[in-house]
Image (cartoon, rainbow, N blue to C red):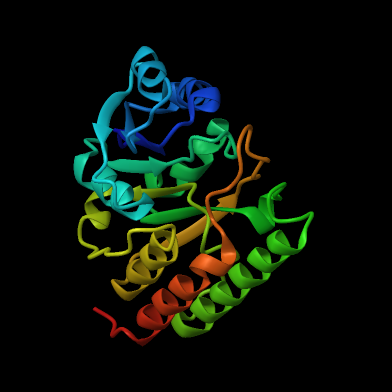
Length: 228
């Protein structure tokens, strides 16, 4: 019997794009969950019309919303996808396939393999790309793997395995923390090509000079932690 899939969409004021994301994910999901960051626009109303279960986050950031998604998901697999239209919901079957086939516990959508419209074009995007590559390189050598993307939030996780992790990061550093903890726990980690599109509206909330130290600190903790 195929494993069931919960698609979790963390969102805050994403009314222009969240409807299309949820509608695109619906054919591939047994459950749709929107974790709302106290939106002041029509994000929640649109998600309700799409048939999503609405949860409100605790205001601490994306990492906290991801942990909430892992706790609340009823599916065997939980898929995380951004609400800004940068990920293609049609890629969800590709993400969950290695888990469905029993070959992986965590699968990340790889932008180096699938291409990205968000990591090129100006100096800050270039710096983000280089920083991401350095972090991924460190993880590869520490854990003896050969992955190409440690940061993409578009990913699938076997729910039971995710609940064994002790994730603590509250920001977007949750992605690299999740990967490192999964490797520490001996979980099978894989990746598939996934193209990242330019977000449909607004600008990224990641301001590199403000968050770079968080990524470095999270990386150092993960690299120095003992295998479980």
